[in-house]
Image (cartoon, rainbow, N blue to C red; front, side):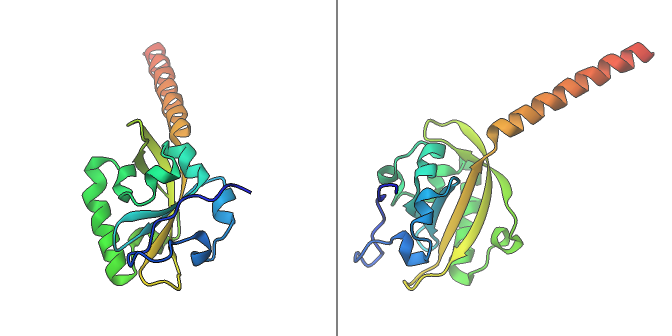
Amino acid sequence: MAAAHPVAPRADNHTPLRADDFGIGSLFQVVRDAAVVGDAATGRIVLWNPAAEALFGYAAVEAVGKPIELLIPPHLQDAHRAGMGRFAATGEHRLMATGRPVEVPAVHKDGRALTVELSLTPLPSARPGRYVLALVRDVTEQRQRQAERLHLLGTALDATSIGLV
């Protein structure tokens, strides 16, 4: 089993939050996708699994307690804060409502741009507040390969049309 990762203290500075507080237990540590739990009220990361470390480059001790915007490109941070604010206030969020993953840009610790597939799920908790589980999968290389294939196809079509004239 993976080593326990740091967890953020609750807002009242009592017992830290743990994966078991959300009913996700040891699965949180072993799932292959990056798993990040955020506190909607504070906009901070409260749980961070080993796959998130590998994907984003931050150790759990670096990420837990930091703003979620750490992972979001600057031009999308305001929209993210607004969405989290709506979820904290109402319990509703358009990305969660669809139940489908979406592709979004993200940022690695070293500043590299990533393209990730993101699934958001509200987490029930016996503790006060609203929390969100983000399951994140890196699709950067897939999208780069897809862009290369489209470029090659476009080049081939251009060459073919030149031959037809």
